[in-house]
Image 1 (tube, rainbow, N blue to C red):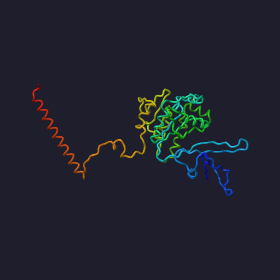
Image 2: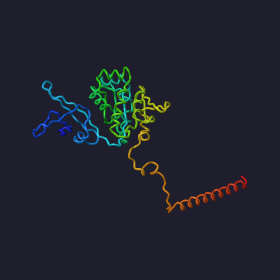
Image 3: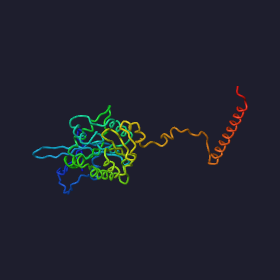
Image 4: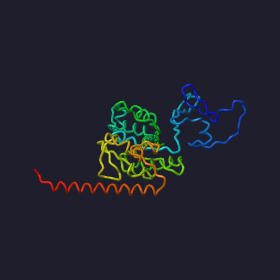
Amino acid sequence: MDSRADEHGHTHVPTLSEKPADGTEEKKRYAKTLRLSSEQLRSLNLRKGANTVSFSVTSAYQGTATCVAKIFLWDYDAQVVISDIDGTITKSDALGHIFAMAGRDWTHLGVAKLFTDIRSNGYHILYLTSRAIGQADYTRKYLQKVEQNSCRLPDGPVIMSPDRLFSAFHREVIIRKPEVFKMACLRDVKKLFGDRSPFYAGFGNRITDALSYRSVNVPPSRIFTIDSYGEVKLELLSAFKSSYLALNDLVNEIFPGERVVPEFNDWNYWKEEYQGDYDDAEDAEDAEYADEEDQGEMDDEDDEYLEQIEEEPFL
């Protein structure tokens, strides 16, 4: 499969109706699928990070319709943090839809700064929502517009339900069973990384989100649930209460920077090194014994000093 990039940097994937440049027609059979093979992905010459692709369909009555999307290329050992959108980034499920359409800010305080710092420490953000696929452009634009104190939400894949609007809204808001879609979706993403689980932590606003994250082995100690008042709770510790602003102060402890060289971690960097030179274990034991004798002599001197003080009368 040949791929070309236009002047805007968009990757062009040829349609099935296009013929080779030499004019010969190849006889091939195609099957409908939403997944590209390894050879097809390799032919796109993807770069690490976000790659913009466009799909075009031409008809005699409506002309050419183009759909733009992104393909993210990550390393095999990437650490992924999952985040819900409605009720997790927005303050509530239903009002998150309505107020965003009306142009009103209905976003939890501190979420942009927290996610930005998590991304700076080497983690990738995966946005997972049960919104219908027809809201894809609107949802991506909303995430791009979120700005708090000069901090924006980091770029990342936005995975949405392939259902229609009313079906997705009914499952998310009415019957409240978004885990049906999310569990299957996360398992599908996990298969891309082979035997290892790429998911490091997860943010949600319901117990169903926690169940979805646990289905792909996200540790309970790193599953955070936030309510409409901005209070963050830990699934493992029900007594734990915090907020996005407070979590940001602990971001380096909860989400430590990746690929830190061992000699530069806190323990090895700040500890005092012994200045002596031991040839073997016996020398080390002798030195330890000598230190104990020195300590014993110091203790004896202290005892004599105390006895001398007790014998002297006070003025």
